[in-house]
Image 1 (tube, rainbow, N blue to C red):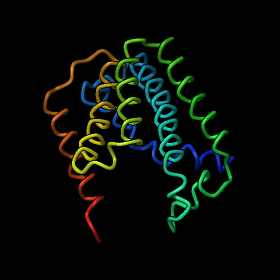
Image 2 (cartoon, rainbow, N blue to C red):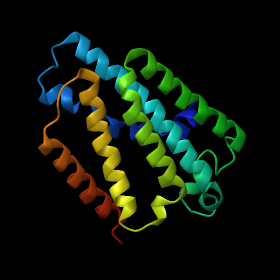
Image 3 (cartoon, rainbow, N blue to C red):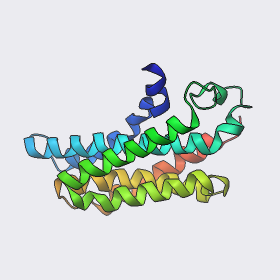
Length: 178
């Protein structure tokens, strides 16, 4: 089971907590229905994000085998087969989409945009300087948007701008040579 959690990169789910920003800033954190709506959006998004992490690992597994740290990832190390990983990724994407379709179909568009953007990132965009950072930043903005749609509140332009710029700053910082 630990290998599956590692494959899903559950430790990266903390990034998705941005989905709760709209709940906090709109002061809806005492509304039971809004809390449930955001929790469902958060959990569904975590499944979708894990699906993308697996796809990214599938795309990179041959180069990850040669990397001193990434070679320990479940696919690169051979602990999870390529076929099993692809199936898990597909099932996660399907589960996330099904839950959102049943609970709040309006969320399908930001989920779809996030999914397609990250597919493009996994295959091409991560290799294009500057575009890679903007892609990451857009992903963080989409998390904020998902939270707002989940509870049907409008977002301030400032939260969108600040989230985008902070994500750019962090992404560039991560890519800075040591």
